[in-house]
Picture 1 (cartoon, rainbow, N blue to C red):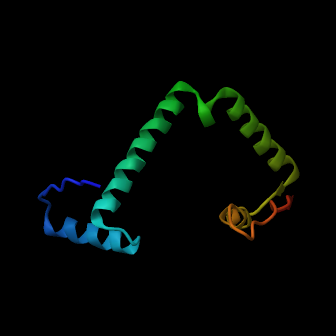
Picture 2 (cartoon, rainbow, N blue to C red; picture 1 turned 60 degrees about the horizontal axis):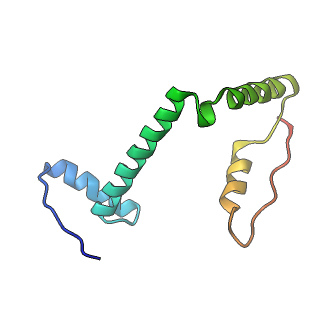
Length: 105
């Protein structure tokens, strides 16, 4: 891969912070900054969906969300977030977990 390098000037405190945050994620400063830019572009795309009432902001999705919240408030049945997170982290692994079961919270 033919990468063109550029030099930019930033203050020492910012440089130190970038190096620390990149190292904490096991990334080079260049890769860390690329991730930040990619995330920013993703946020722009999500904002366009929100403004357009599309994706997770589509009327039918918002209606379903409201119904599920009403069901939870009525019954108290749900799944603790930590159990959902553990299940999601198992996706695509050899030890993928079954979905957690809803219960009274």
